[in-house]
Length: 269
Image (cartoon, rainbow, N blue to C red; front, side):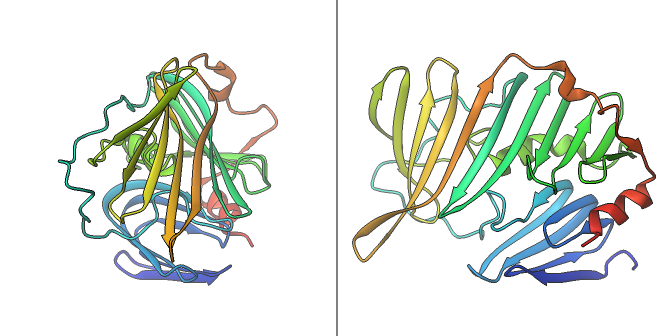
């Protein structure tokens, strides 16, 4: 397949199309390597995401899309109050590790993120056979846990896009300065709750941990027929600034494979 062609597949309620540059795909896992433009469709919810000029993305599709894969929509007025940036810090710390758990109905996606200065790693589908990690240390690597294999990646694959990926999978809990009309609800035990409406007019309740100095929870509500329903929850679990150096090491029982072999592993059904 040559650059500029479109690659598509469907499964588990999804149809995915990519303008092809260097793409690895299977039904449960999508890893995009290299500069690309892509369009993702969720045929169950009719959601669409178009990403342009991003060199790297790491997306796991199990039962639902990762946070942030929702359609770009025109801004909807929040209220009569002037929108502002969040009244709290949510910049990704230079040193930390945490699980990021997304829940919707009876489904859940679990990610793991660790960072220590220039070293970092992001795991998707954590704890499942499809767990895959991207690791940046002396070099850039992909780890496939189902095969206990790893492969080196060229340094030009856009690992500078890590902050954007953290923002995506945390659904804006980290690295987002989304403007809205923020309302402080209450504060107790070092936890402060804020309420606002997002760009789709969804009610959002966000919890900021004053001790840890990061937002740790976001709940998104929809209102239909006067009924308020929780549609999605995003939580940082086990957040700590104490980082295990072992997270940045390749497991001893993992074998090194070529980039071509890694693609076969990741695209295997």
